[in-house]
Length: 116
Length: 110
Image 1 (cartoon, each protein chain N blue to C red):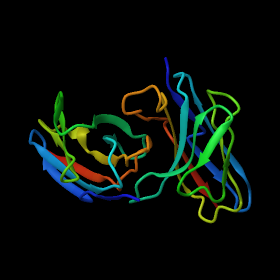
Image 2: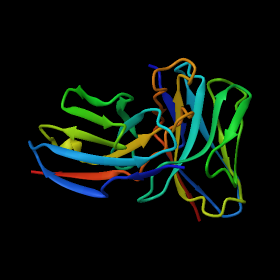
Image 3: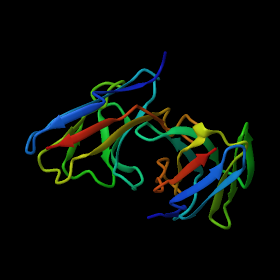
C-alpha cells in the first residue's frame, strides 16, 4: 500500500534537546512538506521541498531544520532554539506542481511532540 | 499574505444538511481545497475547486465564487462520523502551496 508514514506518533523530550521527526512516503511524490498545528490554529508551514536536495523555508522555519537526501524521506529536526516546540507535527507530500492538477497534498498521521 | 475566515464551530443534527462557509482574500487566486480532519488525526482531502461553480462528490459538495472570494462546503445526510474539523485552504496566485484556515469544528448530534 502506498502512503505516508510518520514516526513516532507520540514523542516526549526534555527542554534543550534536539529531536528529529521522521517522514517517509512511497507515493513517488516529488514535493514534501512539514506543518505545525497548535490547538485552535490552522496548519502553519515550516519547510517544504520540491525536489531532492532542495528545500525552502516556510512561514515559521526558525528553530527547525530539514534535509532531503532521498525522494522518499524528509526528516524534520526540532532544535533547542525553537521556543515553543510542543505541538502536533504533520508531514505531507504531493505529486509536484509541475505534474499534478491542483497538486493535492496527502498527509501522514502526525507526531505529537511534547517538550517537558 | 492571505486572510481566511471560517466559523469556529457549528452544530447540526444527524440526517440534516449543513453548509460551512469560507471567505478569503488572496493576492491572486490559484484554487481552493477543503480538507476534513478528525480530532488527533491527519487532514484528508475532500475537494478542490479552481473554477466557479458547484462540484458534487457523493454527500459532499463544494462551491466556489472567485469574484466574491467565497467558497462553501455542503454536507448532506449528516452522519455522526462527520463530526470533525473542516479546513478551507486557498492558494494565492503563483503558489502551489495552500494556506490553511483555522478550520470549522462541526458537531453532529443525534
